Structure formats: C-alpha cells, structure tokens
Amino acid sequence: MATTSGTDELAEVDVLRTQRPAAAEPPDGPARGFSPQAIAAITTLAVGLILLVEVFLAPAAPWGGVDNPGAFHPPRSRAEHLVAKMDGHTFAATAMDPTMAHAPDSYFGDRADAAYRSSRPVQGWVDLVASAGGQRSLLAPAILVLTAVGLGAAVLSVADLGRASGRRIRWLGLVAATPAGIAAVAYPGICEPLAIALACWGIAAWLRDRPWEAVALLTAAALTRETMVVVPLGLGLAHLIERRTPIGAIKLAVPAVAYGAWIVIVHARIGAWPSDYAQTGDLLAGFQAGFPHWHLAEWAAALLLVGSAAVVAVRGTTWMRAIAVLYVPLLAVANHQVWWVWLGFGRVAVLLPVFALIALGTPIRSSAPAVGADPVDPSDQAEAVAAGSIPA
Image 1 (spheres, one colour):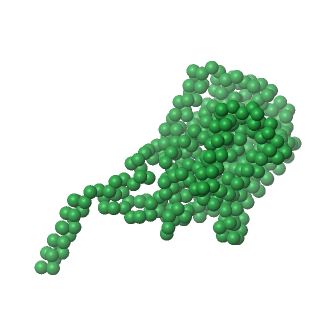
Image 2 (spheres, one colour):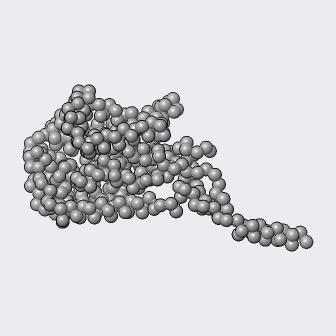
Image 3 (cartoon, one colour):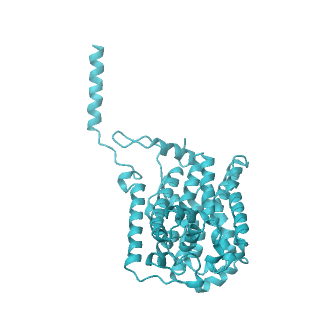
C-alpha cells in the first residue's frame, strides 16, 4: 500500500508540473537577442563588406606622401592606398621589417617618428604572420581581413568581460560604433580593435583569478598601444583600494616593465625614443589648441566620452573607475594632434565607452528559475558572485 501511495503522489506532482505555465525567458537570456558569437560574426561580415566597397567601388584613397610615412611608399594597389590612409601602413612597415633594420627609411629619415611607431609592435607582428612573413603582395589584403576580424574579436572580448563582471550587455553591437570601431572602418589597419580585445580579455582573466594569464594579455595590450598601460595600473589601484595591500597585485607592474624594456630596444635599434615624437605637451595646451577646430564629429565624440565617464562613475565597478581616472592625466597632457580631431582623443580613452556598455548591462540573476524556465548558467552565477554583482 505504501508503494502505491508513493506512486500516486508522484503522479499527482507530474500532473501539477504539466499544468503549471512555463516561466518566461529571463530578460537577459538569449531569447531576447543574438548571442555574442552571432553579434561578433555579424560585425565581422558587415565590416568586411564595407571594406570591400571601399576597395573596389569607392574612389581610391589619396596617399599623403612624405607627410604620411610608413610602408607602401608609394602604394601600388587600391588595397594599399586604403591601408595607407592613416596608421595601417605603419604597422605594415613593422611587418615588412620586424627587426627595425631599415625603420628610419620607411619614415623618410625621421627617427623620432620611426621610434614612436615601432613602440607598438604587436599589431605589426600579427600582420607579419597573416601575410606569411610580410610579403607585400599579401600584406594589405591581410590587414583588411584583420581589421574585420579584429572588430569581431573586440565584440567577443567585451561580452566576455561583461560576463566576468556579472553582467550581460544589452547593446553589444554598439562596440563597433565607438570611436575606435568607426575609425577602424574608415582607416583600416589601426591597432585599437586588437588593443581592446587584449585588454578586455586580460581584465576578464584578472577578475576570474587567473593572474598570469591576465598579465600576459595586458602586456600584449600595452605593446599594441602604449596607453593600455593604464589598464593594469588601474587594476592594481583598485586592488589596493579594496584590499589595502599591494600583495597579489605587484605582478600587474609587468606590462609597464615590458613596455619600458621594449622602448629601450627600439632606442638601441633606431637611435631615438618614442617620446621624441612629442605627442604630449603642457597641461591642457593641446586641448586649448585643438578645441577651436572642432566640428560635429569632435563634439559627438567628446559627449560620448563624458557621458561614458559619468556612467562609469555612477554605475561602474571600482576597477572601471580607477582606469577611467588614469585617463585624465593622459588627456590633460595630450598635444594638439590628439585634440584637434575626434579619432585622436577618442582612441586615447578607447575603453570608456566599453566600460559604460558593461555598466549599463543586465545583472546576472541569482534566483533559481521557476519550473520550465531555462536554468542560469553556473559559470555565470559564479562569475557574478566574484564580481560583486549579486550576493553569494
């Protein structure tokens, strides 16, 4: 009889389960939008299509000559013309001459410019590998492909950092609409998409308590763009604020040390320091010189950065705020070349809009789902607890 009663009770529970309406998909779940992988793929394909139009249908990009030094002087193809619009061909120069044996020649004898450009080697090394050793016939097409792939990687890295921070990002596709993303489409071959990807994955590794993986990624980010040194410094500052001890964060000095060691090598090879190129000046002098030349694009970029900083200040984490604060002295001493156009100062504070997108994301829920609802990913749950977004 006991067995029959137990069977009846189980049958009654099964009936109740089938009659209970299934819970709706949580608002931050995958049913409300594309997955990060899909958004990254769409971004990559869209950017690739735009670049194809720029190469084959748009008027050929002009070459700046002596005023725009780097590889490809003069460009031989429409792809080389497109890459040579701005910084892309400086990384092509690194790909074609990774040992810096002839670097000054690529910059028409300007050793200071050659040293400054050579201080960001990682993008050039990636171009070197993608072009099978820096072969000129492959280099410009490879750089265009890497531009599209790099923006897709940036999208994925931001999504991963959001997850490590305990948030799902609502408007992930807007990563491609930040100053760095727009500049990469307009001037393919620049290093910011790769720098964003390395920095965000590095921060995510640090939040997941994988310190040496984080140090490796953040070192690569600093050697991609020197302003990314603020990221490990900001993480170290946040660690000091929260734990009142530098123990455990000293390893975050490695990226700055590695960058310092690299510029010593650059000086030994080229005979000049990157700082000789003078991208900095007196306090706020660059802003005062550049501000009168602003147009709508500069105002839009400035408002985006100010708005992003406000979001980070109100809704961001301690490490976001620490990194954001460290951007202030960089921008304060930046010269007029940085301040006169949006893609100058917009690419210095490149992570501010990214942090704002994460801060505005949806917190990962801690409650157990109702019957019929998709369960919360355990790894999401653990990462949200570690990041402080939900209680343990």
